[in-house]
Length: 116
Length: 111
Image (cartoon, rainbow over all chains, first blue to last red; front, top):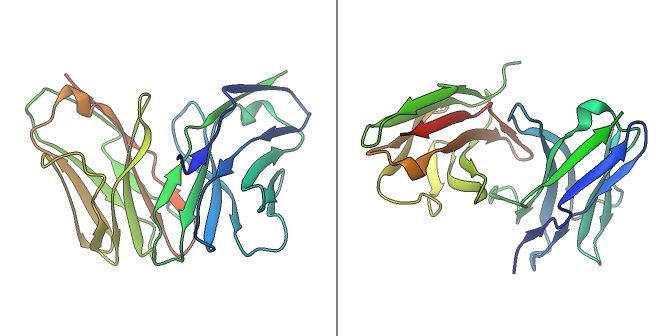
């Protein structure tokens, strides 16, 4: 089974609207972390947001928030007030275990296009 | 603060040549990772180090690939001999107990 699943082939959103990018994960480890990265067309990988498995509240970082539903094993990224610069590929990733095991497993990514 | 630095940014070489990719992690980070990204396979972890010691190299595709981290501020990924199927973007990333921060990547083309 895939550890990180991102099934949306591509997403479109109108500028200034909110958009949700889906991510489901699979792990039997009670301690894990979930990450979202943005990869614009220029190619760099930009860290956006992190959610720990024991965090009680959903993570937020500016216009980014993570809708963490532990029982459903989902960690969807919500981008509010979309901007043209948000057009990019978005990757969900998971780290299993504690910091001693810092290996990340990435999903295949979702392409987001923001329309003016 | 400087982020992760990688060189070269682009490399074009011929099959059979040796390729060396370089990485300088963020100062103070104790983990360093090498990834490869292709359209077909996505992002793959090749190897990672903790405090300069290789921890997991199970992602290294074959013996043609080798990586070293002689000190906390420098790592290399070497491919010898290179093959066309090695063409990809190679990322280096570093972390300290949390998120991994990526370098700009090296775009490698093997002809």
